[in-house]
Amino acid sequence: MYKDLEKKKNEYLIKSGFFYGDKGNGIFRGKKHSYVLRDYKNNFYQPILDEVLEYFEKNNIKWWNENVKKNVPTANTLSSQAACLNHLFFIRRSKFLTLYVLNFITNKNFIDVFPLKNDEYNKAYISFEVSSNKDHLNEITTNRGELNTSIDAVFLAEDKNKEKCMVVIEWKYTEKHSNEDVSIEIEDNAHKKGEERLNRYTSLINNSKQLKHKYSDYKSSVYFYGELYQFTRQTLWAEQMIENKNDESIKADDFLHLAVISNKNKSMLSSIYKISNMNLEDTWINVLNDNSKFMIIDNKKIIEALETLLQLIEYDYIDYKKIVFDIEYPKQDSSLIDNILIYAEKSKANIIDEINDFLTYLKTRY
Image (cartoon, rainbow, N blue to C red; front, top):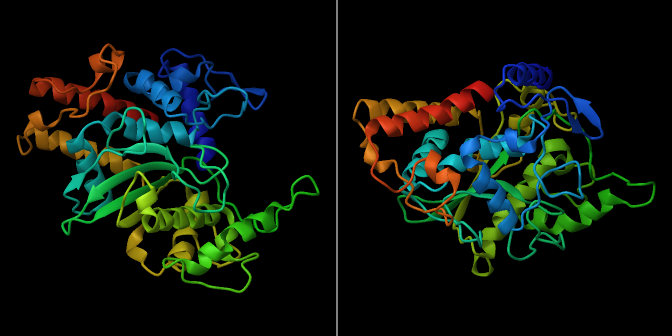
């Protein structure tokens, strides 16, 4: 199983000192685990740590954490949230890096990317734990990261037709396939969460242009099974963001839905849904009117993008001087400024070394 292998790998990395000397055996859900760190700060690539923590705090974003009383990151090395941030936060203040990586992983030809205006603090070219300004999904709250549909990461790109495309990312790490039907869930033998979900999303599914299967009753339908339920809500969210863009700080004309899932996670990718007798990708593609708006990519594509970029810089196919952060981090005294690319003249060797350091971290850990 992929999850078990990742646990063993992280246990080995902890013993080897990879996690900045953290000894592991941290607490997760009330128990000690050898793959859980003692200090959540060691769960991040250190050059991004200070900025990540301040970004979440000042933008009022809820961390995914088993301890609901503390709004801090988890120390679990298998965290999808940490994986998403470790892959993408480094590049978010560079227009060139963001656009290059986005086009590489999607095989699209976007011509520009824009800062995301939904972030009140530290706007840049990628935003995390994104929710709408107004509730369009009957979810009551729009708090970022909790109690509603929040998107792991969002890009806003422009295509050759000058239309703005919102790239919506769902990040999976070691999550397992689920056949759970959340439309029939009952909580504490009283609260009918399944009925609540059906009431919340039925009219939105009926009016969706992307979700093609329409029924008089969506109970136990494909839209409410396991990971497909998340994909359903994210699709509805993207559609509503576009339809209501006059009320939203992110203003897009179209969307692209990406699911980042490791090719090694066979539980997630290859398991068969009883509702469709097909795997995840085939099941989901089958319910979409426009298949070009959805794709599953391996996280290794991001690593491959940066490896290719390094070669292009090394052989002078790309001018290394383009690799700058053209959006400045507000705190000029941050340690981040001393460690990663800033808007300043650097040598070609400096640029290569800094990207190599980041790549080494990703390749070793993920």
